[in-house]
Length: 336
Image (cartoon, rainbow, N blue to C red; front, side, top):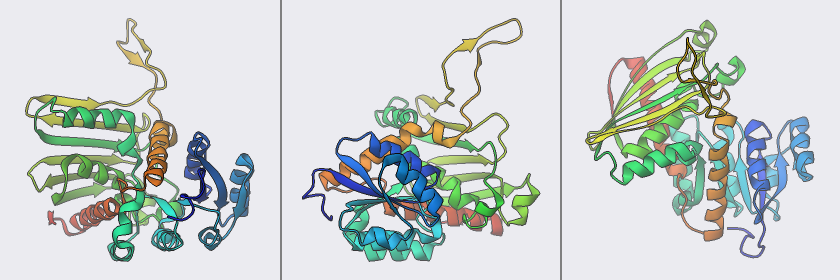
């Protein structure tokens, strides 16, 4: 670690001043033992806007972050193709690192990253924020406490209200690496190592099909212990940002439903238990998760211990994404 042992205040740089950068900046602002010290983005307008909001410095080149002796930790929210390079440079410069998903666009780059990091890979956090969602965390805790006996089946539903822009999709690595990657991590979080992956997909959007990507996918997975999971993804959800988990066990079932802005329900002659619409934007739905995620990262810096999820989890999720892609292309179950 760099200078955190000398200074009581952890000084953080954020690379990537987009939507996620703003979320992380808010989370840092809520801490008394950390401060946002530097914002980096190649687009000066974005960098300046976030920097001015928190009255901090900004730069346009990531190398200026890595070489800055005043920075203790780096939150990487740059485009995926830069993740491995930024992780390795930041760690080499003695910084603690949290990186947004996915770790890389291809397995070879991810493997190289893990190998070069060595033992330090256990201290580089991967931004799988859904592990920290209070509702999902409560479900996992109650499952671990044995409330429904041994887990037999897990269902993860994740549907977006709309697809990202075509320009974004082109560099995203496809739906499995960009969207389903969160769900792959959640399945591993609940089931452990995965032995089999079977995926099917189709398109509603001709634009996405032209990019060689999918907008509707269903994946079934089997763990090494024989437990089953199903992931259901869509990029065309008419009723909002659909985020649910169902855990089915030997003695019962636990389920986490969608969140609405309020818990008020209405009953009339034509409706029963009518609720307001579910949240339709991922930054609102997972605002608490992002905050708790960053707090966990900062706590790990103070404690100096290993972090979970780490880039090793990022690699394993990417293995599943790659297996799902091969399963769709080759019309077969992929064994790992």
